[in-house]
Image (cartoon, rainbow, N blue to C red; front, side, top):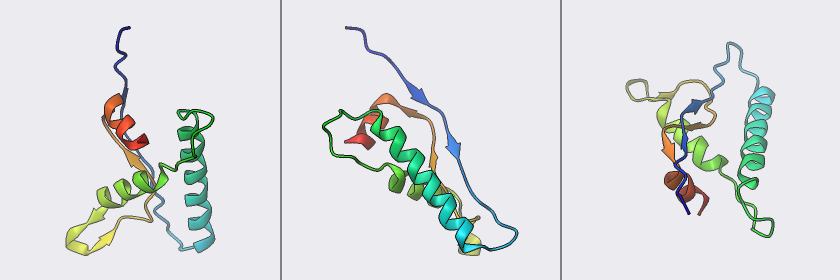
Length: 94
C-alpha cells in the first residue's frame, strides 16, 4: 500500500485587543478549543477516548508570540501549528 505524504502548513490565531474584555477572551479560547476538539475527533476511531489537541496548539502559540525583551506575550494568544508532516501530527495524536 502506498504511503500518503501529508503536510499541514501553518496557522496562528491571536486576539490582540484594543480594549480588554475578559468575556471576549473566554469566548475566543472556548471557540478555539471547540474547533480543535471537533477536528481531532475526526481523526480518532469512534471508540477512542476523546483527546484535546488545544493545550498543545495553545502552548505552541504562547511560545511563538512571547516577546522576551518585554517579558510579555503579544495579545492573549490562540493556537498555532506550522510545517507539520503526517508523522509529526500522528505524534501529537498519540
